[in-house]
Length: 125
Image 1 (cartoon, rainbow, N blue to C red):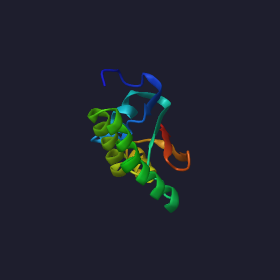
Image 2 (cartoon, one colour):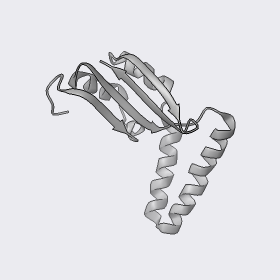
Image 3 (cartoon, one colour):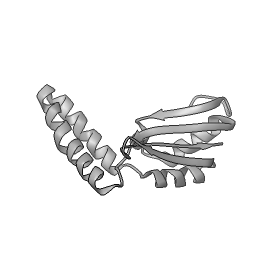
Image 4 (tube, rainbow, N blue to C red):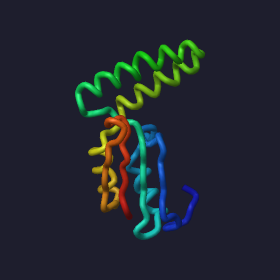
């Protein structure tokens, strides 16, 4: 990022962490640009761990959303199909915590919300 070292107190990622190809590099760069004791926070969709919620959620994002999108346009259908695949392939909150720790973050945490469909993950420099 085109910022000097230690400039930010907080850095946030909203619904995008799963789209980074090299999360380790992104975490290193975030760590570099955070001030001492600064926080990195990310909120993103994840695959729920509870069996019933997971089955309903996966059916919804792979079948219902793309079908509704197709009613709007082929672009919406493609976008919603991509969203489903990106969620399915995303790192678990536990894996994200490991990457944060390897990137130098401490006081890492993960909190699942919205029936486990969304996770808030963070760590402090």
